[in-house]
Image 1: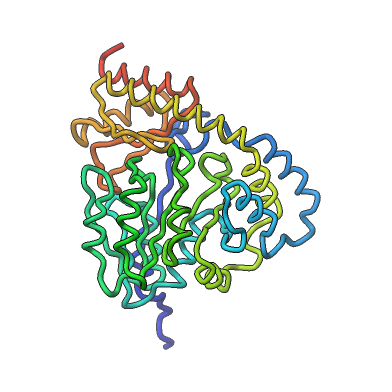
Image 2: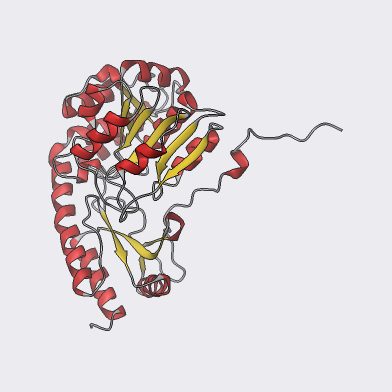
Length: 361
């Protein structure tokens, strides 16, 4: 008999990633606030560009993504040659683990970090290592204390998720200064555009060979269904990643839509402003109901309840009113619900539902 087919070590230790719920039994169109999507959708200019690109679908897309990289470089003031485009920022983060970590290496991340970080490590055969946080915020000293000679990657979302807390540039610089040369500090900036005055770590990338920045078109650009992301790093790191990136990883439609989206600065600014206003109203309204949350620097809040039982009851009540949010027990917050900031009407609907839950209406 032939030997059983076995996957690489670590693969069977991976629990499948579960996204935010999008359907609710008995309700045709629930209010989905479980995946931190842009409630205003994509830029109309991006939609038009994608429609135009459909007529060229018989042609292969470019392999170097030059037009999109140039657009990103112009908007953000970066070097286009040091940008890589991926199928969502997830692909760039995956390529980093495959290229720079393996058996005997360690991949480090904060205890409440994005659940995919563990998966990235295990898929490369590396060992995932977790550093404790402090008050739902990344602890720089704890991260640095967890670094060993085997550490090859540090994944850090800033603003964080599911807690939308934030490390300022002083703290990030202190972290980057303490990371040894053989280790890459990866700044996952999925929510960077929502943080006022934050460059996503670009200045740290410019100053250091071992800092990488990733961004996505899934959040503020409203293109989560298109799957486009990018990374910025030293030329050496980008050259390595391009050696294992699929040559046709991006479709013509995705490239066209993302290029138009990144150039539509007016739309992005409107989304940023509307999110900031809705976020402040959501946090303030929840606080008045006795539901605390940390100051958010993203497009969601982490509402905290007295215990897990109350959080589950609140989630059930929201569902009864046709509202989907995210339970985050798997991230270490059994007493909390992650709630996306929606349109002004969405925010009103959530606050009214929570007021009824609390007996305030």
